[in-house]
Length: 145
Image (cartoon, rainbow, N blue to C red; front, side, top):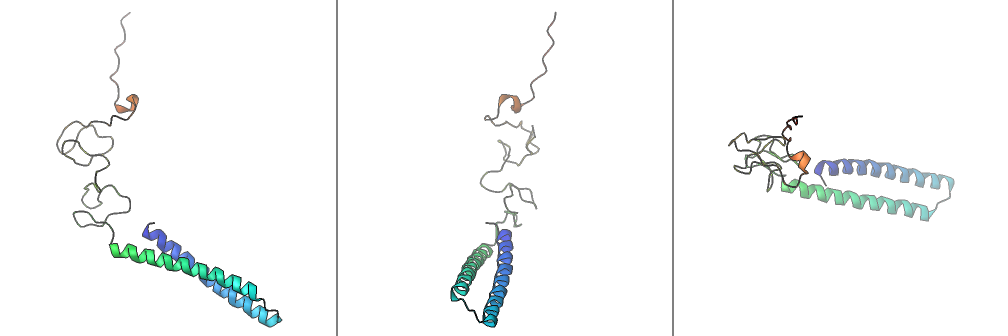
């Protein structure tokens, strides 16, 4: 899970925990005031609160593990955005293989490029694309009548 999503979940869990503790205190006070104390109801609410506390601890440990890793970095030293394919600082492709790269020199390419901007070689389209999407067919000459 992404660290930002974990932080949002943690904030929501903390708000829920505060609300449940406040509700539990109000419930116990009302029971005392009316002199009708129900142990099973208090036990049930406390068990729910403990389950919430366990999830909060789990989220904290996941966040701690994520912060120890420091996040991915490019060869230039810049931090990489989550699920990015290219470095936002230098433009290098990220990961084992770039999403679209020149077969000859390995430079990153726009998806619609027909020639490499670095070495000038023609870009080969993937063979798994249907015939009609690989390249624009040459216009046909009108047949002579």
